[in-house]
Amino acid sequence: MTTVEAKLEAARGDLETRDGVVIAFSGGVDSSVVAALAYDALGEDAVACTAKSETLPEAELDGARRVADEIGIRHEIVSFSELESDAFVENDDDRCYHCRTMRLGEMFEAAQTLGIRTVCDGTNADDPGAGHRPGLRAVEELDVYSPLLAHDITKAEVRQIAAYYDLSVADKPSMACLSSRIPTGLEVTEDRLGRIERAEARLRQWGFDQFRVRDHDGLARIEISPDELERALDLEFAETVRVELASLGFDHVTLDLHGYRTGSVSPENDD
Image 1: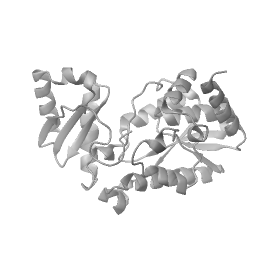
Image 2: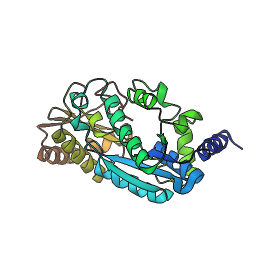
Image 3: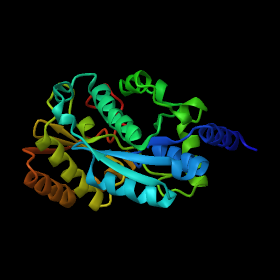
Image 4: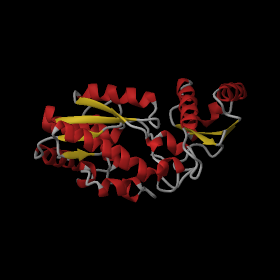
């Protein structure tokens, strides 16, 4: 048995000891692996729950539905708004903490309704050492169970387990919420979130895989992974991007020649 297989068995065995679990489910690779492990261990007593809000792109919600279907797990969707929190809208260094506290609070409410005591999330063993992560403080304060962290499962191992379960998200790039595209100190508003989502949807339609559209108060700064950057430098394509993003409400459109980088507008790492 390999190390990864041993960790998989240990995590699954741990989950089997619980009466039931609700998984904070984004449809990303981490939470999808937790959902697959939990469903494998508990069957119908495992529930994936996605919190829908203005910071979650519709494409990500559709993806979460699809992956839940792949796993076969029951999938619940709850709705809330981070924009009702002044602390979140203010967008200071602890924005991610305020967001995670509210989002996980929705998970606990759903769990209580379902008569389930344990809420799980997808924090993996690499996350605590990955820079400024105020959201992890919310996980600790609310006593959320993180099976990947508990069994020392790294991000690379998460992807191996995802492949073992034949999940379509095994190689999916990390995706943070839309508010991570807004520089710290600039208010998070529905208008800004909306134009970021629409701009990134355009780039996805044009075939780009790893990118971000950062909103600097009306200036769009596009970051694209270095291996895709050459295509974005085509003059005809650049003009198309400028026209399209201007039509979405951006006053200026720029391409960052550094390429895609995590956490380039805020202390939090952009997963």
